Image (cartoon, rainbow, N blue to C red; front, side):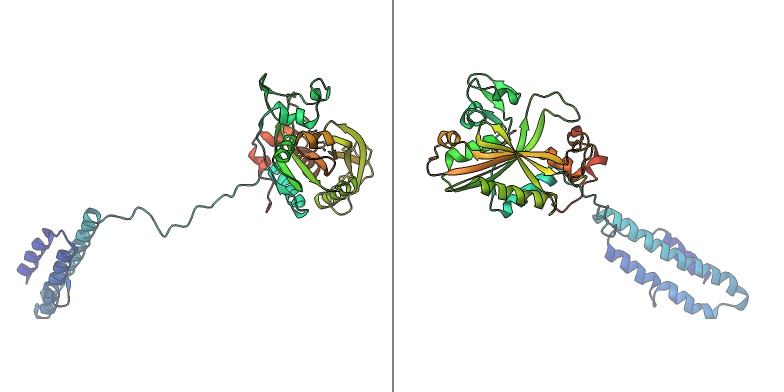
Length: 339
Ligand code: DAH
């Protein structure tokens, strides 16, 4: 019996196998119910009582050796010939950090949504423009001082290539290629040569709205403005129109809304007037319609334009315009919305 144990021990220690099948054959040979080691356990009954202790110990050690060897072979075989899957499918996923929308985008989308409900569709135009679309077609005379109202970044002179100073240029582009009815809302970035401070930047964003059709009147404009103000700032918002001047509208007006911080009572934000200015508007000047090939005897229209930063400030009370372009994540992460 002892001899057999020693022989098997030596045999098992030097076992080799390269495939799963070979390993299985060895397992059956030594460890299965009818395997060599089980046979030895059966024969154990015949061992003399005084030897039982010693032989029993050796037998158990042999069995353990065989099990370890088989496991070792399995492991070697697994590492060697089989591709180990590099992906741990049981690992939990990394937490996904969702980004947030930029406050300017949130407000832009909201403005577009509101005008969308009035039937306006979105139109866009280029940021690098020519003089005609930004100024001349919009009734700015060559030597008109209004051109100085907007400090223009010129890329090239004669012919003039420039960065658009307002989204009114999109009006021109749409009108010259379409026949009324035209009902568009044009969001976009604009550029002006301004010193950067908490209240001015060399680029900012505007939304322009244009409606041209037969019999469009100032009353239509006023109604659209009131609807917009209430949708944007709440149902209690009041509006007020003040006469103003823009080369491309006649008559022109500026619209104030009741200060939504103090409810119109007067505070530092509204300079204690109870009103804050939010946009420019007016009836499209017949010269502009004609310049774009639209018969001003048949059609009339209204237009309005507003700065998105200004509306955003009113909604979220951002004190410093520069925050919008500094990419400070602590600031940006404060804006979470479905828009
Ligand atoms: N384009 C003007 C600006 O940048 C804003 C504006 C005023 C647009 C009146 C309009 C308008 O369409 O009717 O200051």
